[in-house]
Length: 296
Image 1: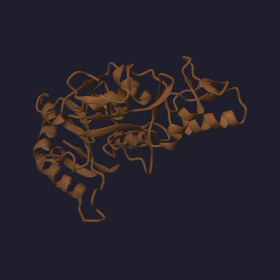
Image 2 (image 1 turned 45 degrees about the vertical axis):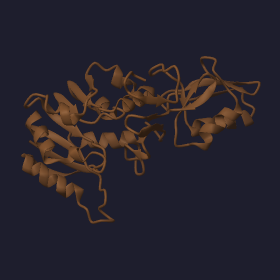
Image 3 (image 1 turned 30 degrees about the vertical axis):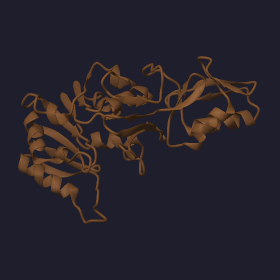
Image 4 (image 1 turned 45 degrees about the horizontal axis):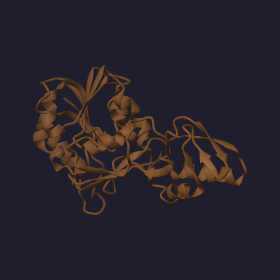
């Protein structure tokens, strides 16, 4: 962990990015291969992006760098299917950490494609109806076409910044929580975030950083904040005025809102956000994928 983060990591000797990671589903496939008497199996070690060969010899599962796991090690991810496990020191180690500074617990959670990050039990992507990558695509599609310079206000695992970079000249993405950045470094799906020269990661709160950005700097803003109860300041009129100032004329805004409390407490968050956006100067405000889109 970086100095000053005051975070405890359950993972030792961190080597960024090119690590071998499995989930409960992958561990189950390995055990099934052994039961069938196979000597080798092709399996993804980067959460379903590519495949590698794992040998099965003398009761051990032997990975490409000669790391070895036995059957007892594979039972850990099978029992905990909502976690990702790093193959390290001949053991399966859960990718998780607790921060003494934030008092939050962080872990990487597998899905059918890209994993999500869970912070103190709250997942940062829509995962019930779709995968995190499908969710990200729909958010960006809601304001397509996009071009020029884009602001991604809340980086997370970086899927928004990575996908937006395919269409635009440059992306600024902000992430104030160093623990989230550390988790992203383990995630194979976040690898491009740290290698793409069209992406600039700012380890800063967007609440402060937005005041530093120049007037009319961005062609589009993708605002995908934590839920209202965790970051109410990112739903405020003052913040929306700053987003408006930093956008170019006719610039586009996507704002994730979800629908918290809409069924149980008759709360209309999207409606409240829409009113504040209008007061901030935005126009053509309409519903989009789990949120709103607007024009300056």
